[in-house]
Amino acid sequence: MPDIFVSPNTRLPKIKKEPVKVNPFSAFMFMPEGVSFENQEPDETVVLFLRKHFITNLPWILITAILILLPLFLFPFIIINSLIPQLPSSFFSLISPVWYLFTASYLLVNFLIWYFTVSIVTTERILDIDFLNILNKKVAETRLSKIEDVTQKTGGFFEAFFDYGNVYVQTAGTEAYFLFQSVPRPQQVVRIVNQLLERQEET
Amino acid sequence: MPSDELIFDLISRLPFVLIRIFTVIALLLHLFFSIIIVRQTKIMIKIVEAQISPTIYLISVIHFLISLTVFLWAILFLFLI
Image (tube, rainbow over all chains, first blue to last red; front, side, top):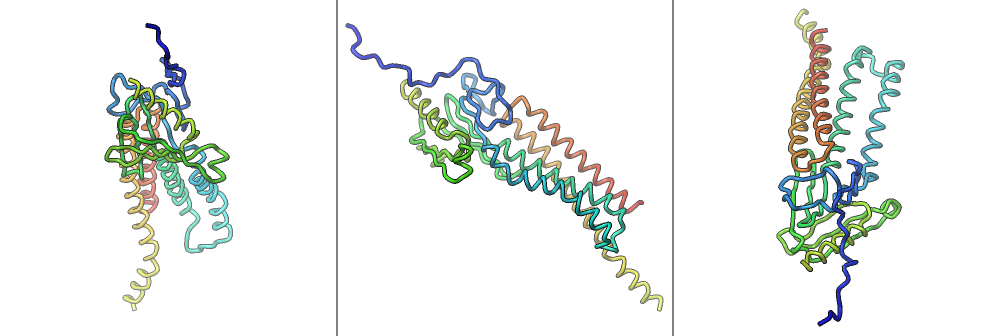
């Protein structure tokens, strides 16, 4: 008997077999090459690899720039005007390296927190790795089969201008929802996750 | 009186002695902090593996070495020079 209706497969995500080479500092990676995570299963493919949009780093980048530039003007000003007469000018040969060491630490810690706070969507599950600070981290994961709803929320000038926002993944697991915070192209993220869910249901 | 002169001399030197002690303590704490950064980076690159991970680990090690250098320079500057 001929088939009356054959469901078109056009809506399913087209997962390329060959991963795409991407910028390692990118905040939005679709099928990235050379990216893996702890406890990744052999047949599991990373579909989305997300970080906070790079523009969210602007506050600490600006503070770092100020901290780098400040001694160039402040220290000579203090020495020339003898604002601290008790302090010998040779003391600034110690203050300067200490100042720049603390600035470098501030820069490094903020970069590491941004770089390693990631959300990963694979063909099997989603993972949310949050580094709250350099000492505290939170790793949450759930199977795609436990996902109930995916929503996105954007608002504000910067979010509208640079196209980033929050994606909420509601689950039936112990973790009530997963938050992909300030990720680029949230609509696309929601669409890809929904397509993966459809694929999961069909299989 | 010699004892008054001694006390006055100690009081006048006290701020610089305190600055020296606090600077060394702060840099020592920072040295421990940079060791923690190296250890945490090692853990992080195991959780999320990427091609650039060894470079990031190297940067954290360089940061620790700079921290150690500044600590040694501070001891040299404050107590020996």
